Length: 491
Image 1 (cartoon, helix red, strand yellow):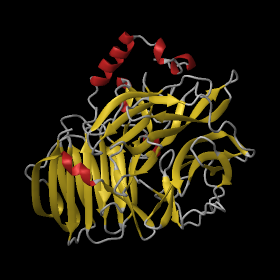
Image 2 (cartoon, one colour):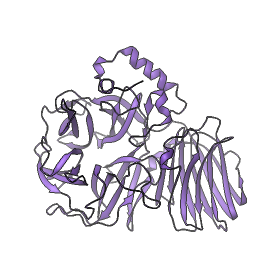
Image 3 (cartoon, helix red, strand yellow):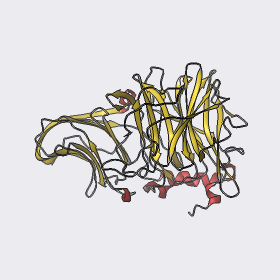
Image 4 (tube, one colour):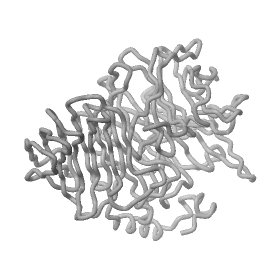
């Protein structure tokens, strides 16, 4: 299909039931539909939005274009869960319906207030010359799940000094006031983030730009998120326009964080350390966090990237969300670990202990398409060791550690149907350790790798054939002890 402007911006009330059913049939025929990840019923999913614990449940919304695997007229889709594992699709949450979001309900966040869930989002509009003007809009969800939009924006104007790239409000409460960060671009085409404050989530006052040391760091900062964790200030954002440096910034766009002192809400100053990428894999962007009733800070990201064609496009859908990750601080790094509730997915168990000496080897019962795998490699004399997943005649996805380089690798060169090869098929990062643990979640078309209890994470979409179900362990240039446990997962 040729996606003309008219087709990309069709309203849902102009779409026939037959067209929707035909698209759903095409999607359901796809061999790469996920088993236990949040994915769109049709069309394209991107940024997670409005992530909040409210009325006894986790509510998670996401950007959604229902009619195809492209970035068209964006809506918010609603899904919810009691345990962060089993998600219930609720359906359309917010759709473009007025002059302030006529060309898309863009990203935003949620927070409980007065017994309701307040959803602050960017409304995208275009004029007759296709010039953009963003508005920051508010919708409110009651305990019955009914959502009502405010008739006018809560932030209607862009301050002097910034372009129309001004979006993705993330709100939090500090004391008696509410604050929001909004991703922005200065008129000199450099990225930044601005601050607002409000007594009631409806009347907002511009408080100025967040003062960081990253004066020229990409041309736009998307999806900002600020919170405090273990006594430190954590600022997440997705800078666009970074050039690759060594093993870093290999994807088309990046997501990461700076860590430092808590943000000074009087001076807007954030004293922080270096920028770190959150995920060192191929497919991760626009993460958002929330705090749950137990005080945990939980992150979900978009398992995908803008402006990339994926193999599922031919079946009328694209992308999914990552598994929820609990965040903590260790030294100068943010640590990400799968939330404990994911153990609820575990079914049949297999385990084994082997010594692999300059070879690759298998363990009985270790095979499959959908599973969790926990491995530990220790007492190694090898140059490199690791795991081959989704192994077939000509396919495999490789996770390894090189003891000479002191780096972990995720290699997708032979992972199946190729895509985005112009950005490379290998990702790596430094991990200086003797004992290496990989905790891996494998779904039909994705892999999430947590290295040494979340010190580093690799996320990637993979598109192998269904017959590629082998698991192999290898050690080259010496021997390595391997301890492994595998659980099947029933999605």
